[in-house]
Length: 190
Length: 190
DNA sequence: GCGTAAACTTACTTACTAGTAAGTATTGAA
DNA sequence: TTCAATACTTACTAGTAAGTAAGTTTACGC
Image (cartoon, rainbow over all chains, first blue to last red; front, side, top):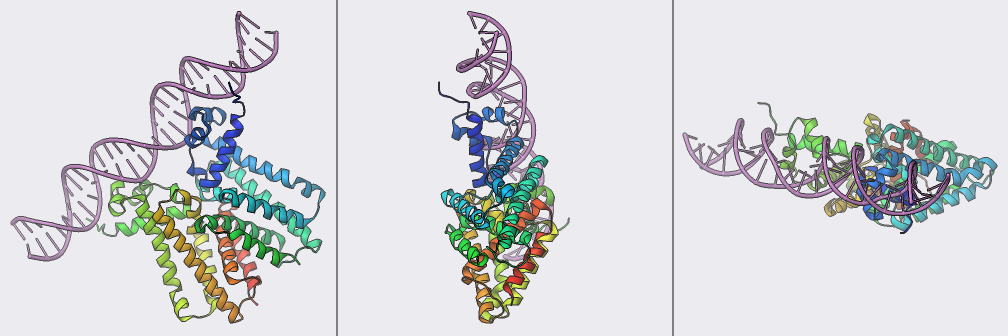
């Protein structure tokens, strides 16, 4: 018999893929189970309701963000490195299979999400916003960046632009991100 | 007996509301019929399939865009007026009930849309992009605007930012749009 | 080898989805 | 006055959604 113990991890990863491809209301327990070769009830065994699964998903995104940014947030570092890392990550995730930004995928279905998921999604957004704001603040202080307005507003604008571009890319099927990131870099960097 | 002849129009308008609130896969024929006080089959009478309804919806958005921009596209005019009209419309639509941008609402569910809807959505995006690009071109030539990069890339960035902001606003429940539009204006206008 | 817990499957339920077939009321034209 | 089209309703279908109860297999500690 082959090992099955990592089923929970596989479920979460498949759910993540499906979320970023179809939105939270766009996939079912059956979509997950059939592609993993297990039964519907196996998914319910690990995540008793779809709300539980969704909550675990958003928590995963929060942890991922935390892991990637915690060193910068506690010890500082180059703002350019952080921003370039963000751009690179976004472009990789987007080019592979046109995955949506998690926040973008959750936003459309936001009204129908259970309250626990809403709260967790709000935290994910706040933390993402907070991190990028900090990057811009540091970049401004270290004279790596230049921009008008305050860092909080500018970081939100950048996040919104990336999120929107990843969605528009699915409609137009063209590599919109490369050009827009180049332009953003040109505007931001001295 | 009260007049019912305008049922088709009411169906389309309610479907538009639901699309911008929940996405295309987030509402059912029953959601429409029950809130209009008619039966499920009445919706099917006017729009035989959900794909038909969706196609009519996207066509409606295209017509709306065309009506609002045709004078500028054929006779020219002030680029600032066009841009301010766009900002004002976006802010009104967004503040009323946190409606999503149509393209944003369609993007998440894009993969599952019927081909006819995909094609029509692509046209809506192209036409929106083409209009805003023209506005930026004219604004640049008339020295109303200033920005880096080419107008096509910049207009896409603006559209993506607006779309993303309207989504993020639902998560944070805060008036993000006003600040971001102010900032965009400050960057763009001389 | 025995008991127990973890990790499932089988087989089901209830609710809701898009969609349809057949019937009914209303309207306007010939 | 009849005919036919329009605009529906009633009553249904097949498919799929999330969720559950009860049984089965596997691994491990004792």
